[in-house]
Image (spheres, rainbow, N blue to C red):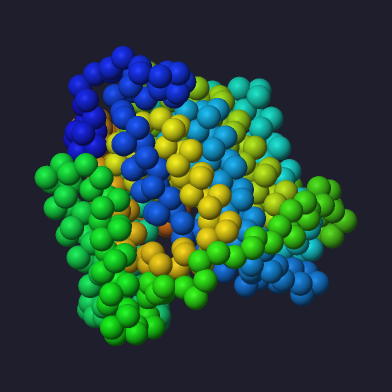
Length: 483
């Protein structure tokens, strides 16, 4: 049993099921309880609810080829709707505590790389095509085969890298770490706080939240992460009421004028499946879809493996239970996101926050999905939880996932170097996909120079070649005259 599982207070073994619901989700069998699943569902929601604010900002701030923009209110609605539906489907169909919502990174590609070349309907049509292609890869068994072809220690490195990445996300979201405005004239690209030092009440809320979270974790308090989020949100509300602070970021902790609002579903179905082919060249469309597929494919792979490993759900061969079903649902989520104009939906690494609270089954997803469904009507209430109150959970989860680093054989360079690159590149480039790609390419290269090329699965050769194309996409586009 890992340290993180002990922290989540997981029993030493399964207990008899007490109801048909228990048997369906295998709650007792996996050593969990309804209480832990519910706490985990809440924790996951609060750590990823920011997407309801951030996705409309990213997509709503961009213009398509014709100068049109998407309505932020409608974007909030479809973002919540897709997250609610697909999270519940993953819980029931995949039985993993793995929530889904619009993917960060992918939405930026859609907004700033794809939309300027065509209409929004055409851009979302490409997202649907990407999701359908991923589903085909799942049905043919190729996507699952790639995951099984990865060496176990490289999978563990992916989990560790994601841990550092998610901790870094927490530090950045809270403003504890910021990008230096004129980094070209300095020796470092990031700094402590906004000016090189910590200042302001929001940062204090975050720091107190981190201390509270790690203190509760060290004491193995049940619900440590969720308790921290609730307590620090209350503290933030009090501080903001007294000081009237304007620098909280995306979400300001103040009681809204109204708690309920009517959802606007105007963007549903607003996509054109093949319209992009009439707006730009076939080569451009192919490259754009390839970029979306590769990013979605390996982001999900890393997330599924990382969350499952942290939950202790991998089998003796390091395989994820019901993987084919899980990957198919994830592919369907991409289709749903494009069809709803909320961009491709994908599995969220923030689900690890729920795992840290003890979630081990898809029952937690019913809670998370239900909260996203409520968000359709209670969108104003989301403004209460600032990132500074939720981000400490990400830092804590980063620590829990980091503990898997001890399983990597650091004396064996043929696995240690690819593992190191996987772990380092993820947070340093702010991308799970980049980290996995760096690790794959390095693993194949080192095995080859050591005369062990035959030990590399042919699928790793193929995916590494695709990653080389992915990393060199800009010169390839220039060579083909796309740019």
